Image (cartoon, rainbow, N blue to C red; front, top):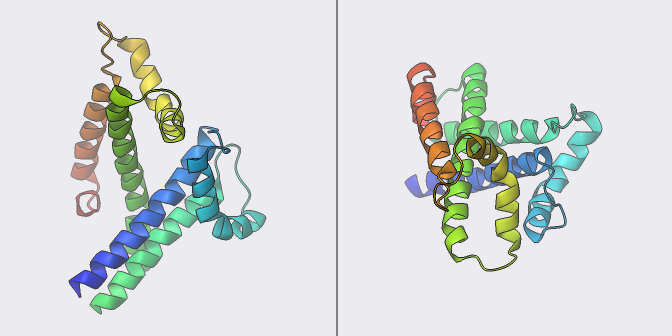
Length: 182
């Protein structure tokens, strides 16, 4: 039973990350000719394309991607609830889904910042994955760099963003009951 729950969690969470990336790539107007972007688009297009015919975007906000992310978490919760044989409450699953999408977006941002920071030590020349990570994370780092410029060639903006993210995580954990369960 634990192996099945692990597999379901892993598969749904991986696809959720891809859907969040799809939304994020469109939000920052990333290079969609990049091979990494093409993978994300191809993995989500079969579901998002029909949804877009019914649910239009609101400006630069891709509502289809947001709805798909929520649906991925809701289906995951329904499947896990049915496997456990427990009763489910639709409102609880909906609230849990919203919190889960936000928290997973934060986790994705954390890992992208960490990988970008580590790759910056070794990166030589153009790398498509590093380029996309730069496009995705720069909106979070640029405002910090305006306040705290690099000190002696050392960029502390990633550290400041990590501290801010940890602060927000702790703050939300106090006031949102689902936050610490995800």
